[in-house]
Structure formats: structure tokens, C-alpha cells
Amino acid sequence: MFSLIVLCILLCITAGVSSKFELCAASVALKNDSTYHSYPSEIYDPRCTSKVCVVGGIKQYSTLPCFSVEKNEDHSNLTCSIGGAPSLCPIKNEQVDVGLRSQRAWIKSSPLCNLRNSLPNHKQPATLNNDVSIIVFGGSVTAGVSTQGCCDQTVCTDDKYYCINDYCNWVKYMGRWFSTFGPNVKTYNLAHAGYNSDTYKDRIVEKLNLIRPNFMFKKSDVVFLDLSVNDANTFESTPTKMLILERGLEALIRRIYWLSEPASMPTIVILEMWMGSPAGAEYPVDTGYTLAYERIARHYNVTLWSYRDMVREMHHNHTESKLVEYLDYHNNYKESTGHPPWHVHLFYADFVTAMLRNQMEQCDESPAAITFPVIKSPKELPVPLVAHKFLHCDPDQPPLLSITSPQVAHLRSAGGVASSPPPALGTSPHDIMVAPNVPAYFSTPASAWNVIEDKKGRPGFIHEFVKDDRASAVLTFHLNVTHEQLASHDAPKILQILYLRSYANAGKVQLLFCGKAMTDGRYEPVTLDALWGDYKTFKFSLPEVYSIDLTTQNCDGNEGKKHVAVQIVHNYDPHAQGEEKTARGNQKFKLVDIKVCYSSNKRN
Image 1: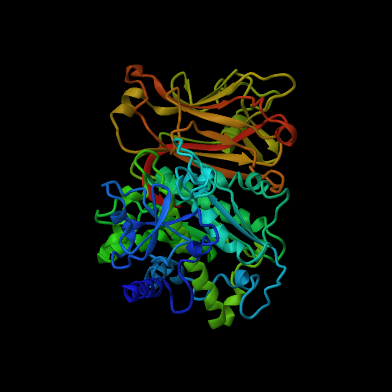
Image 2: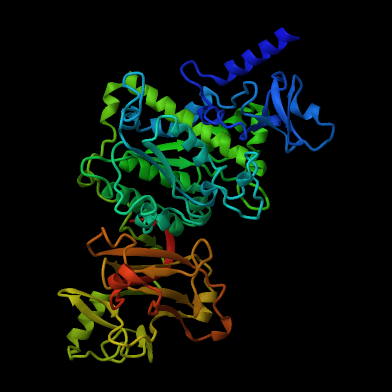
């Protein structure tokens, strides 16, 4: 019996170790804390039966599978202690290779040599004093929602619905491994429930301030973007939303580089976690968000690792049947909360650390890899790929609305509308009309919005709150179709707005369609903010394009012959405080162009 147990332990150790390093480094790093649990017993090979089992809160040594110790049918709470006998590592070299496959399509050398050279390793003494920051941006999954149960401590047992647990998420597991390199290596989980790439592009400084004010990235740092769950579920459904995703991700990457120390750029790793359709379904090769990720990653030579590819490949090959079942979609994302349990986070942490170690080892094999990343300074950034692109309108259908402020300014000036103040919008015979007595645009109050130049040669539809005036100002645009005509044409429609963003004197507007608030991919009211989220560092003004699909289900068919309206509602924000209140000033908003058309899948 003793020889059988020893043989089993050796098999477990052999199965879990690469020829070069321990693949389950995150799990191994937990062994000093016996209160943390390892993987649930059901994913173990039943031949490897030497374990310390937790049964009814009591640790027992067993040569049988854990579920055989407890004489009841519910084995879901049985786990095997990290501090017990060697446990089977579920990570394999071939899984790591699949996870790295996307990166290797355009990055031939290791991207992690700057990190590796900043950590103690066999070529450098363990007394290195480099400060290394591992920073993770993500959503509620990354934050650790519904991950309770990973350890015996009180902090791990809170089972409140939608509870964030900072002890049981994958970032905490990975951070424990990074802490083994010394006190100068720190891991920061800056996840925020509901945030996606587009959200973070305006909130990155706010999050970095949680580390310390005026934080700047450096070349020894690694930034993980774990945003695929919210990116996929918010933006995948239409080309318009996909364009918002690409713009958001591109802007986020560029801002990370601009928030770096001179000639000291961090390594950015984009993570594909969201798998898409349920396990067992016929998986497509790619879904929308993965194509967007690859497009942006290639353009900026950014690293891309895929948990999604690894799990799907295992399903396709019908290998590791117990593990595949364990990582099944229905087990991965709890029905009650839509979030994976703690043991999937442990697997994910082991998977990510295995890829980290794989890439750091390659630095010895490829000295040239030390030059990565190729972009060494923000000044070397390539031209933006999608930041100022418009979606194509259907060329076979005339636009429903197409107004540019230079066009309106030219018409009004040609008609002698140069008085000060200029006449109200929609009241001049030289204003554009969509039908008799139906102006293409007008303001409420009449004197609020107007087409003026805030800089010479740069007109726009502009409104700002001056003196004590705090009344809401509504800019209305009429489409050239009635409610009745709109209802008869069910082709997809898009709204695109070009507006100015700046670091000072900038406000917010809401968008209405058919008199009702437009909502974004997360069903929240659309707000366009003219103030950069990073207004302290972005000391410039640039136009930005906003695109959204128009849904006509909220339009009232009883309105019949009335022309359909899009409204820009400018409300004064009384909640701005401190530096933000100063930056907002009179809360000006400048709209440059607006277009509504039938959509095409093409992009400019």
C-alpha cells in the first residue's frame, strides 16, 4: 500500500510539472497558508488518490478520492487542502501553447524580458531593488464577484449575492505568486464592476490615483487588460457597437503609453477570457470582440493571451474530459450571478502565471527579445487606427439627417446672418428645412444653442452656461422622415455625432430619440462628456466621434405625419466638485456634425 501511495504521489507531481518549471505556480504560492483550498476533488484523476481532504471542516488523510470519505451524495463542497499531499496540476504545456498562439502570430520573441530583467532570476542576484507594478484593469469578474469559499478564513466565506471578494479572485492568486519575488513587486487589482474598454479610456487616471497620485508606468511594469467579459457582452451585437469597442481599446492603450515615464514603456497584455457560446456548442473560430482585439493588438504590437482559445481547443479535441467538464460554461459562470466560482479563478491564475513563466524563460533563449516592446516612447505610437473613423452609410439609401456646422454657418453668413447675437436657429430663411415650416434644427430656449465660432474658422452648435443661467438647453434635429415613414422601413439605422472634447470648460449632454432617452450596450442612458476623463494630463482639444444604433421600438406610431426628432439635452451638472468643478467652468458643449442614416457593414 505504501508503495502504491508513493507511486501515485510521483504520478501527480510528474503530471503537474513542466520540463522546466512548475506550471501551477499560483497554487504552489498558496502552500504557506493552509487555510486556502486547492481544486475541487472532481477534477482530479481518480488514480491519484493521495490527498488531505476537508470533510465537514475536518482535514482527513485518505488514499481514496475525497468524495468517498464523506458518505453522502453532495460532494460539491469537498476540496483538497493546498497544505496536504502534492496535488495534481490541471495545467499542461500544450494548454499554455494554445493560450500563447495569438501572440505568436505577430510577436516572435518574448514580450516579458523587461519584467524578467527586473525580477530576481538565476542570472541576477535576489537582492534586486527594482520596483515592479503588476496592474490589472477589469470588470466584476476580475474584482472577484461571487468568488467566496476559497479558504477557511471568515473573509473568504461571505456569500452575499453579488459580493466582491478580494481574497479569492485570480488577481489575488497571481499577486501571491508575484510576492514571492520580494516586497518591491506589487500587484494592483484596479477592476471596477461594469467597466469596459470604452469606460476605462476616460477613467484610467482616476483608477491609477488609487495606487498613488500622479502614478506613471515604467518598463518593468506589466498591465493586464481583463475586459473581454464586458467588452463582448456590451459591444458584440452590431458593427456600430464594435466600432465603439475598437475606439475604446485603442484609446486606452494609447493613454497607458502616454502615462508612462520617458522612454520607459510598460508591457501591455490583453486577455481573452470570455468564451462566448456555451461549452458543447459548435464554436466559431472567432467572435466579434476577438477580431477587434487582434486588430488593435497587431497595430500596436501588443501581447494577446487567450484562455478562450485554450478551453475551446480542449472541447474540440475531447481531451482532459474531467477538466473540460469542470471548465464548462455552466460551471464557469454561475446562473445566479453570471460570475465564475473561486476554483475557476484559481485555474485562471495558474494558467496566466504559466504563460508568464513560459515567456520569461524565453528571454534566455532569445537575447534580441529584450528590445521588446517595439514602441519605446509615446512619440513612436503609430497613427490611430479607428479613433476618428465613421461607419459607412448605405449608399443605396439617402441619409435621414446630415448636418455639419460649417455648412450651416456658411448658409447663414451667405444670407447676411452675421448680426450679434445671430437670429435663433431655424428662424432664418437661410436655415435648412426638412419640410415646410419644419426646420432641420432649432433650440429650446431659442437663444440657448447657436452656430458660432469659438475659434476662428471652427464653427459648431454651441451652448454654455453663463453667469447664473442653469436652465436646460435642448438642441433638436428633425429627420427628413415622419414617424409613419420610419415605421415602414425596418432596416438598421445609426446615429453618428462629432463633438469636441477638451480639458477645460466642458459639459455633458444626454441624447433623446423620439423623445426618449437613448441607452448604450449596458442599457444605461447615453451621456456624452466633453471633458476628458484624464483632463489633468490631456491638455488639448480634439473632436471625437460617437456612434450608436437607433432603435425605433420606442417611437410612437400614433405620431404619424410628425417628423422624427433627435435631441441633444444640455443639463448643468451641479455635482462637480473641487478640481473637476474648476475644469468644467461654464460647461460648454460643442457639436460639430450629426448624421442619421441606414447602416452598412463597411467602415471608412
